[in-house]
Amino acid sequence: MILETERLVIRNWRDDRRDRALFHEINSDPEIMTFFPRRRTPEESDQLFDKMRNRIAETGYGFYALALKTDDKPIGFCGLQRPDPAPILKADAVEIGWRLARPFWGRGYVTEAGKALFAYGFDTLSLPEIVSFAVAENHRSIAVMQRLGMRPTGSFDHPLVPDDTPHLKRHVLYALTAEQWRLGTANAAITPSAR
Image (cartoon, rainbow, N blue to C red):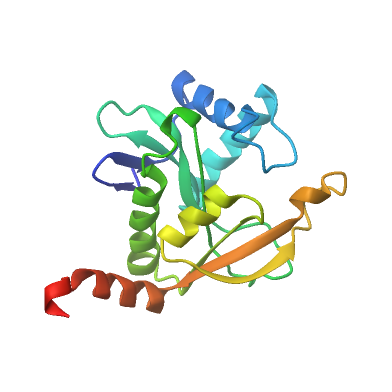
């Protein structure tokens, strides 16, 4: 296990039918994958599942499984990973990213996991900054970034998005520094009457 929150367990993926099925679901559902160039076949999903599981085990970085605390049912992922290089990112950038199965949208799970991962990234891993990026039209993901206190820092054309999907190339970049996070958590701890 990586972390626990009020409702979630943030952990590595398990090599079992339940985790694999959920991973395939979130990588093949047309609505979930609206802002990605393609959906993955079961075989491609299994390959990525194994790669992600191994990366987390070896490095501690990756998109961790999100599971409900009540029954350990996997519902998606949220994690910290070193992204594929993009021209606008620093060489040592660490990205926070997420994807949830549709029945779990709109319940605040990603915000809850994201806050815990910021605390982990800044306090335990001593990261100076955490970034996130999304297709410019992906308003849901951008809203999550904003709820997490991230700030827009620019935009770029993602070099790994194929030319035959030009509407998905333009990405917005958000970031949160350790200093901004600490200031934000300190301010959140001050009650309105104490200000």
